[in-house]
Length: 459
Ligand SMILES: Nc1ncnc2c1ncn2[C@@H]1O[C@H](COP(=O)(O)OP(=O)(O)OP(=O)(O)O)[C@@H](O)[C@H]1O
Ligand SMILES: [Mg+2]
Image (tube, rainbow, N blue to C red; front, side, top):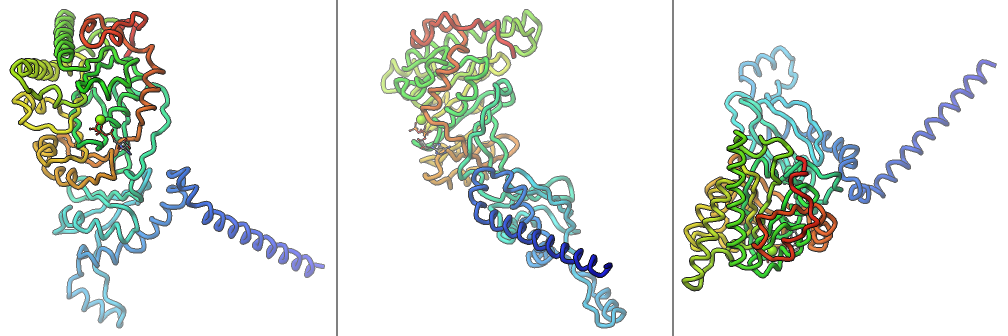
């Protein structure tokens, strides 16, 4: 009786393990077949559940041979090897010391780990072998940086995040004057934060992605309680897309000079307001009194500066001076500049170099002449120059970003003209009415009395 009970328990156990095996095999083959589709649909979930465990295993398995192969291991002392040979009765001599690594942590599109340096090592020794690490771990790229003295941080990206950046679904208005416009090479979001860096210079050859980046920026800002002002002296071909959401638009240089003059006057009025309230910037004013932030977008800077005759020279100088004044005063008074151009060189006029110095945020797409890349990035970070010059025409939208802290490669989200136009139309009722700008720029886009009063806007 007992025997037959044991036999049936055994057969039940075998049956269960059989089922488990069948289910596991079905799961694995299902994942293998549906893997590529799952990866495309839910890249982060795919990476965390499948990609990361496999990469983790590769790093753990190859750490020691990789460090030894790349010359990053330290041999034990010869005496120790001899003693261990004698004492250990022919046992293998002790292994060389390899740098100690910390936990391997997953990130959205890769992983990172900290590594303690061995005596005599510097972070550069690890940076040099980053390509070898990428090959061994079968990842797209590995970047090495110093975390703190004696410790380096290794960040690996599993695939190229710049290949096809996908526009995340926009929820709410986001933080004021802060827009996610693309992705960085590290897999993190590329944020243009005008509160942090108020003025931007965007350069790039024709069809390199300048307008697409402005589309992404405007699509984000259009949802926020900010005024957008356009200066597009190529007849408004690029910026007139956003016309319903613009508080003013200048489509030729004469209008641009007038509009910039009005903006300077408005900025000076704000300065008086701040002085009377004894605050250092508009953000210190009470919410009800705080004037609406204004983002001035200039597409094709050269059109403002190029001169063919004497009368044009005066106009160009007036435009240049007004832009420089806005850049100098604007940040504290809620006026921000985003200036785009194909070619930005000192040959455009003396004002260009002075203006460039005021534009702290730099974005350099593929450029036709090294001078423009140098103008955009050179005085901030010479290393970034090489990266900017190697952007291929197929990778439109890819750019090198430079700031005082360093540089990064990034790619903007592909926000089409139609999409930008739709967003501008959808949020047209948020367009602030700025009476100070009436008369400057194109009338129909300026005078819209149904627009909201800037004093009613919240931060
Ligand atoms: N981030 C991106 N991702 C994918 N494709 C892009 C991206 N940015 C731009 N492109 C492609 O490049 C084309 C040209 O881009 P865009 O119009 O932004 O260039 P541009 O620098 O403004 O050119 P121009 O100086 O002639 O106005 C786009 O129509 C699009 O097909
Ligand atoms: Mg363009």
